Image (spheres, rainbow, N blue to C red):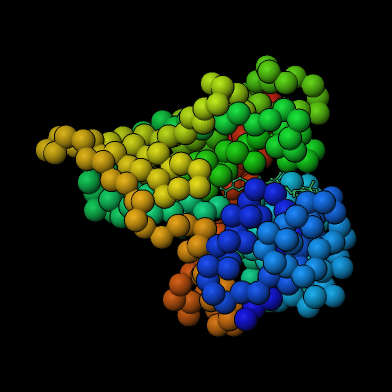
Length: 337
Ligand SMILES: NC(=O)c1ccc[n+]([C@@H]2O[C@H](COP(=O)([O-])OP(=O)(O)OC[C@H]3O[C@@H](n4cnc5c(N)ncnc54)[C@H](OP(=O)(O)O)[C@@H]3O)[C@@H](O)[C@H]2O)c1
């Protein structure tokens, strides 16, 4: 059994601890959290023998790997420490709060020969795989325009809403909702132009880009418009993407923890709805590939049968695009890549 320790004891630590256990190949050997109460509670829930408020002491349990599920600023500190300890890392969120730290992580990861997988589970989600396959088959012709929106009622007193703790809404929310999966489908953006505002929570400590609209040009003349915000209707998450092609349209409803739903609008067949409720959960799939890859040794990319899809090198451009969005919105400039 592979020994995995966990830092963080919140919502996603619970989701991914379950996914790791579902592999049948993992023993959870310790948990660290900010407050002793939540570490102890989490340890009780998962029958973990060691709970602490000092994440560095997790090494006493001799873990092989670490699951990190934290606010992003503290995540940076924990990841840089874990790399020095030669631990493989499943990282619940984005790679880092900025690209400079992201580059440091890439260098250390290569030096220490460990595996890091970032938490964007979209690339493992059945609905996104379906879209990739359908686009490959040309079911909507050539993709021409994407219109997408992701609104989430972030609690104002949460770390998500705190600029320093989260790294900002474009990193925390936009990379996850759109940028990571769209780069996987369409390649690297060529041009970014954004506008943002801060209306509901205007204190300087709150996220500066509380709402943001960005236009991105992707290769092959694909024009993308993304709207994201921490403001939405009460009790409602509003999240979908429409991909218009020359011969039809795919509407994607990724959903938070589920498997997602797709509606295909075609001239010949009208509206076809595909839901994936019977398919494997993306978190379980990602956890399984992460553990398999550690067990099979840190071999060269070309030899990996089941590839991890969010290695640091693969996701650092999510951070760079988020930085470009912030730069564009602040300075009223178009950013070219
Ligand atoms: N893939 C997805 O679907 C998805 C969805 C949402 C979030 N995420 C990502 O998942 C990650 C975790 O988010 P979450 O929603 O689970 O957050 P959360 O519920 O707020 O939990 C955060 C945890 O971090 C702990 N913590 C805070 N500061 C700490 C410190 N200095 N040392 C140790 N522990 C500390 C908190 O401790 P206490 O409880 O002890 O205070 C809490 O247990 C983030 O990276 C987020 O972006 C992914």
